[in-house]
Amino acid sequence: MRTARRTIDKREEREYNELQEISGEEFMPKYSLVVPAYNEEKSLPLFYEAVVPMMESLQEEFEIIFVNDGSRDATKEILKELAAKDSRVKVCSFSRNFGQQAALLCGFAEAKGDAVIAMDADLQDPPEVALQMIEKWKEGYDVVHGKRRKRKGETVFKKATAAFFYRFMRKITSLDMPADVGDFKLYDRKVVDAVLSLGEHDRLLRAQVTWVGFTQTIVEFDRPERVAGETHYTLKKMVKLAESGVFPNSDYPLTLPLKLGILGGFLSVACFIVFIVLACCKIYFGGLVAWLFPFVALSGSIALVCHGLSNIYISMVYREVQSRPKYIVAEKINL
Ligand code: UDP
Ligand code: MG
Image 1 (tube, protein in one colour):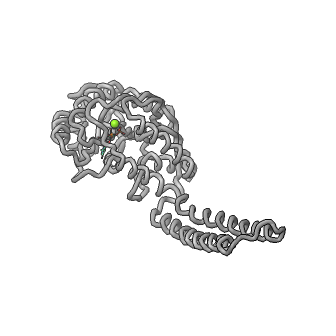
Image 2 (cartoon, helix red, strand yellow; image 1 turned 90 degrees about the vertical axis):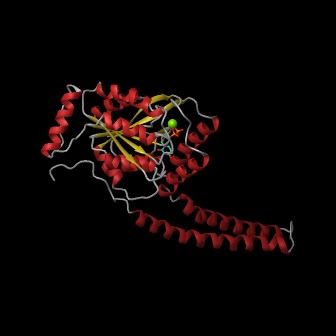
Image 3 (cartoon, rainbow, N blue to C red; image 1 turned 180 degrees about the horizontal axis):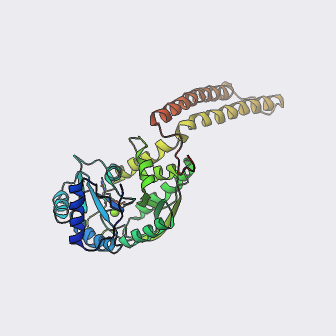
C-alpha cells in the first residue's frame, strides 16, 4: 500500500523507514528521481548538494536512484558514499556501459514513486525546473516535458543536429513528439508502467513516452552548461540514439523503395510515350540506347516495387515482434 507522509525531520524519517522495514511494509516515496551517471565523479557531489535541499523543500518523501552506467572513474565509490550517508539514495551499477537509455529504463524499473523525474547528473537539467514539473503534475498532467529554449556550452554542430533530428522525427513518424525536448521529464506512475510494458530492445524514451499518450505538457527552460566534465555523446553515440528513435517508430525507410519504384515506373512509361510522340511528329527518332532507356528504367522500377512489397511484410513482422500493446487505457469508469 502506498503511504503519503510529510517529512518532519531526518531522524523521524529514518525511524519511520526502520519501522516500515520491521513491519514488512515497503517504503513508498512520492517522488523518484532517476539519474543516469557515466563517469560523473566531478558532477555527482554537486548534483547531490543542489538537488537534495530542493526536494526536501517539498516536505514530501522522495528517493534518488542513480544508475551507474559502467563508469571507469570514481563514480561508483562516490555513489556508495552518498548511499551510506543517505538512505534515500539508491544505486544500481551496470556491469558495463549500456548507454543512457538503458540506465533510465533501469531507474524506471526500480522507481517506486508516484511521479518519476528523469534528470542528467551534470546539472544541465536545473533542479528548480523539476519543481515546476511537479507543480504541473499536481495540476493533473501525466507527462511534463522539459523543453530547451536555449542551450549553453554546446557546439553549433550539436545544436544543429539536435534541431534537425526533432523536426525529422516529427516528419517521418506519426508521433507528435514536441521539438527540443530531451529526457528531462516528469512521468506519472501510470506512464512509467506503460513505458515499461513496451518490450523493445532499442529504445528512445522520449519517442516512447509520446507513443504511450496520456495528458502531456511542457515546461520551458534555458539549458545551462555542464557543471563539470564533458559530454559523453560522441557522433557515433548520437547516430545510434537517432536510429533507436527512427527505426522502431517509423516504417518510412521500409516503404521508400515501393514509393520510388512506383514513381520510377510512371516516369519510364511517360518517357516511352514522349519518345513515341516525338517520333510520330518526326521531331526526334533517337538511337537504340535512347529507346532502351525507358525499358531499363522500367525494369529497375519493377524490381524496386517487388522489393518494397516484401518490405511491407518485413514491417508487419517487425511490428508483431515489437509486440507493443494494441492500446493503453488511461481510465475506466463503472468497470
Ligand atoms: N550517460 C550515461 N551513459 C552514457 C552516456 C551518458 O548514463 O553512455 C549519462 C550522463 O552521465 C549524464 C546523461 O546521461 O547524466 C547525459 O549525458 P551527457 O551530459 O554526456 O549528454 P549531453 O547533455 O551532452 O547531451
Ligand atoms: Mg549533459
